[in-house]
Length: 421
Image (cartoon, rainbow, N blue to C red; front, side, top):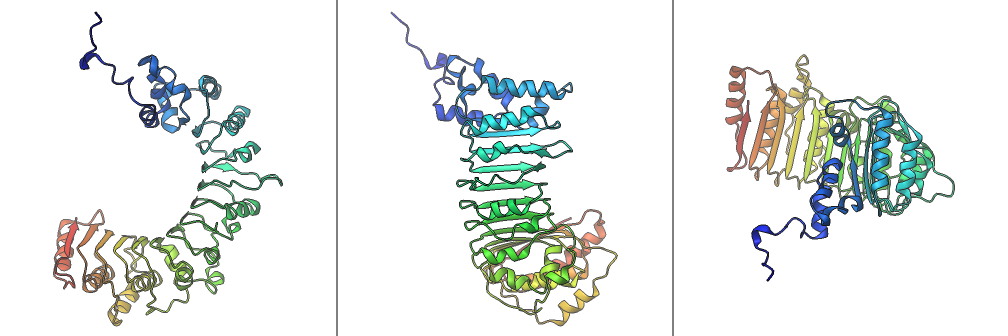
């Protein structure tokens, strides 16, 4: 008589469903995923047929914990992984630590013939990786992320990536043809451009784009917002003051931006973007936009353009619920213009739905304190204001700032002020 298997000696790991096994492998680096093949017979070929290969930076440093490997050794490791794998590869992430070689181009060719849908190429080498033309054969792509690569113009017979929904580019030069290609992506809903050059060649936003990030791409063409009214989330951090701003400002400012984005609910802007958008803004403007979340990065409270533009933005956002500000104030500049402006104006904000405010890197300067007092007096639904002090302020000064903040009148009887020294 065969003894029945008890709960204690069942191989529960081998009895997991195929979907659950795949989910487990997705959360592992490639080296650990490969080791699952020794768990049991049922796990032996799971990794080799798994449709996702994650050979990222963590994988690279994981295979070289105590020694450095050269390029030929790295290529042999990746070649062996491709050799052992069978079945389609739908998701592929590769960190490139060495200079370009024909082997890397061949891997792209393999992917283009194996139904690749999500592709990430993170080039950590100093020289950009020149993408092979095989990239345009990956017709089923839904996700593409490229870091420090050179994208050559597509062949004339190429008609785009019809299924691409998410595109992330970092340290990429945008040629006119590539700009037109991005503009014509019919399914794209998320686009991120970080430290890209020649970005002015993106003149029209894709029709279905709802999420757009631009970081440290200084040649950005603001006029492209006139071509898309479906954006829900926008993040622009220019990182430095725009050159020839007075030529562009004649045609574009904060009012123009938001008037062309009626559905926008989340907006991130850095101080340089605010300064650019301040051009032509009437300081007492009060429009009506649908924004619910605003994040202002590196806001200089001693810069009148930045502060007046920020106040205009707040006054024009009656549905605002969450406000976050990271201050970046030059302590050598007094900001008297800002103080005089805020004290002289009868500023009515109308922030009836604002619930949370966070101000980081707070210095306790008079302009910052006046700004906080204004928000407290104009926000009847406010629940929390958190002030995070700038590092380096001594305890005595911190006590003075917190005492002053706590004494301010509040429009909301449930508003809590949290001061973090």
